[in-house]
Length: 262
Length: 149
Image 1: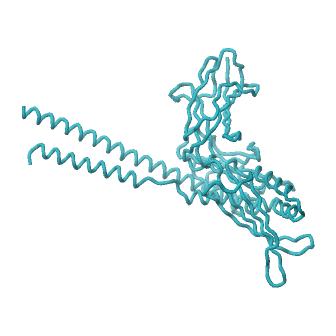
Image 2 (image 1 turned 60 degrees about the vertical axis):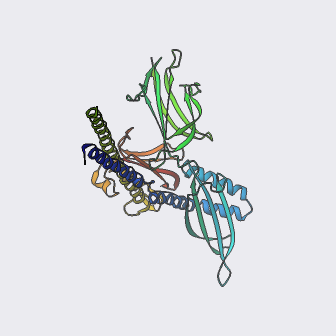
Image 3 (image 1 turned 180 degrees about the vertical axis):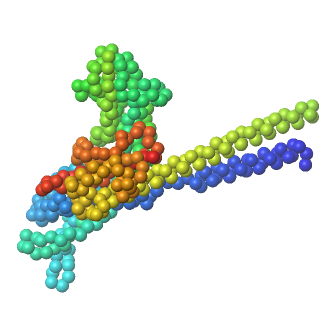
């Protein structure tokens, strides 16, 4: 084998190694650990049922529904869900009331409640069940099966973080700025597990009086991370300014306060 | 002429070899870094989930009388010992952490731990819900735990 053949042989070996490395990279790619996600959201689903029962809300929902006040029950469920569920979660609650007919238990009533008001839109629905005993208005014991189905409404958006910087390369973080300064900001959207996610948001810059300064941007697409900047003018009011991030439905997601000095 | 062509072949081959070696070492390094960061995050996720489970589900070790029903005396005891490492290790917390209980509007009611850095290694943040019992009053609260390395 002459010199040229030898070099080509070595090249071929390295090319093969490169292909192998790329393949091993592809094979080692892993999706986020689903057992952890399953555990976390199922635990939240159970938490929801526990506090629904312990706070007496479950009993109240059954009483209102049995007495023909479904609208009140539905409003009560929505208020309770709004207080207790994390912002990106939605819920469907099924209540089944069983009575004893002398030989076995039979289904007497079943009620369904939704928060905020739709069937699950996600394929990942986390289910929990709880059984409780109650006495009806005639003091007869019944048992109730509560089933909660929890799902995420906005691609698991939990953490929206906002950071502000003095420089375009975003190396020098700061919360304090002066007039005529440019504020460089970065918005990150992640799920609970730190995975970057895609979401549409609006960014509003509030002046110290709480009014919209018009320096923000409407309906921007955040693919895990979004960067932008705005300027403080000479006539801008001194004090605490806020960078506020809303989701596409207008729900508040995150706020960052910065200070404008002389 | 033949000798010149041969030396050009050698130069090109050495260049290709060099590029291949650099890309392979870069890719290998990247894979190792990613896998290390992923493992660190997974460990932090496990630690945060386990700690929240102990706090909100274990009636003996945690801050609850029964699952999700927070006892204000147990909670106060936990907050008082937050800076005690051996006490925190009962909940499996062995890393930097920040603990907070907030109301339905996310206003903090109780907090302890370290201030959360902007860039924490393997930083994870989890929130669960509970019912805080204070005397005869009960309030829905959010229990959050942030862990980083």
